[in-house]
Amino acid sequence: MEAGRRPRTAREKYGEELRIRRVAADMTQEALSGCVVCSPTLISHIEAGRRLPNPDDAKRIDNALATDGFFARWLEDLESKYADHFAVAAELERQATEIRQYGASLIPGLLQTDAYARAVFRAYSPNHRAEDLDRRVVNRMERARILGDPLNPVVWTLLDEAVLRRRVGGPHVIAEQLRKIVDMAEAGRLRVHVLPFGIGEHALMESMVSLMTFADAAPIAYVEGLCTGNLIDDPSLVNTCRSAYDLALSDAVSHTESLALVRAIAEEHEDGQH
Image 1 (cartoon, rainbow, N blue to C red):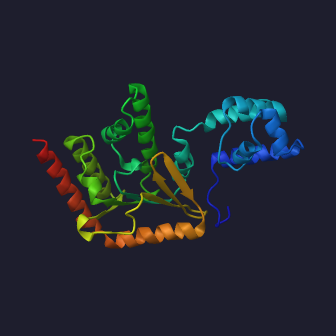
Image 2: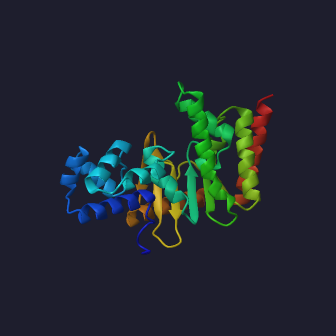
Image 3: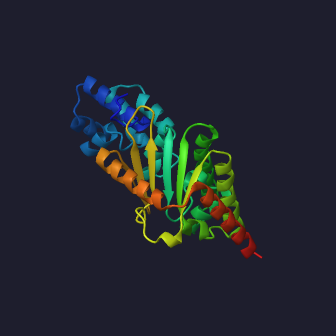
């Protein structure tokens, strides 16, 4: 794999195969879109790995290209458990050798406990169904399986003090969450640094960010807002994100001091529930 390119996702491989089969059938994107009854732009997005067809469109692609259900069957394996704006980032997360993440307002998803994740999902889905909430929590817990390997990925976590102070789920839930972070760090699975209120402004105030490094591909950055996410692979922008992370890290307290602070705040939360 070329060092200047990030890893290909399953969506991109799907799109590449579609392009190969379409060209082999001597069809243009416009001609295929006519058979699928969609816009040529959608075919372009699918071939670029930015979108997936819906099941009916995949069947029509198979009919148009005489691929005997190939694309419809493959689609079943690609349907993501995550929101569209995060699906590609979640796939790349599993391939990363190093992840540097910053939590501006909540604990990053990879580190969340079941109860903390449930409280987060409940907060922005007030009219949720119990089964939908359970499914989202299970999906988030499954993401954390990549941390089961004692070596990869290497994980750095930078947290704003506000994340530690906010009583997501109540005092017991947040205390349990903070103790999980301390336990992971003391086990050598996590590097933690806290940006205390006292430092004032810092370079990552405007956004959360996750920086991913790969063994044989270019690094990427992922930033997220409400119902949106942006995967950044432009080298200059990735470098800008990394520089911002390094600047914020230089303002944080040491790993040892950070763990002491996380532990102390966990105790404060537990004392507060009485």
